[in-house]
Image 1: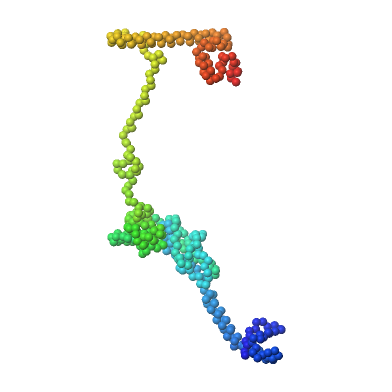
Image 2: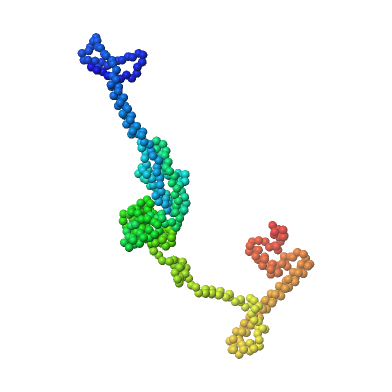
Length: 391
């Protein structure tokens, strides 16, 4: 029976416990067993060769290659956008951590799904401006950067960045569109891609049309290309959308109209003058002295009034009588007022302070007393002093 053992550690005192299961079956207590120990060099050489082969296999599988730096390039540039693409990422035996895009030395964001996505589009750039881009690959084996790519966005007059994908077009329209695209320096590609800038069609249907809608690519009519060629610059697509309404010139620009859209025409003739305000009622007879008095009538007028009839003469006589009575009343009031004023002047000369009896005779003080009584206050003539009234 041959037993092969591998020595793990050898020191000054070696004690080997031989398992009884390895003994012959007829060995019992008291039996004497001879064990011969020798070195097996052939087995050692075979084990060494097997180990070296395994190490070489591991090195060849995991240690002979390292991740490669990304290779970045510009695929297309327009006035406001840039499409970048790169070769598939080579990670070798390392694991991917992240793939980031940098613009002008600052991080613009991480690339989603870097192992399957090899292009990206950067929009919202300034017109005729230079930008520098590069990729940074981070792996478990280290960090690797791509070369820096400098891209300058186009001017408004540069139409070479336009990339068109065509939809459903009549044959004649397609031929004219192809010729116009060649003249302006643009290009037509098959299928909707990431670098497609415009989708040109006359009908809103089809697989490519649906894909353009999903990618938010402007869907325009062929007239947009013709307009860009005529103007020698890229134009906005708002008026050339496939579903845009084709309206005429604004309402105010049409001949023979005025005002804003939807407003009725305004009159251009002279504005009519406003009606005169109603006249005030004439003052009553006796309220003023402007009415003609009987003495002011001429003899001819009086003679004509007499000849006109008895009714008119009677009415005129009655009116004259009323006016004379009112004049007499007014004259009497004026005379009374003059007498009261003269009496007040005499009292002021003789006495510095007017009495209550003299004040009650004048019309002005009667009005003041009446107004103060209505308000509930005291008049200066009710026995109070000037100081009390002021307080």
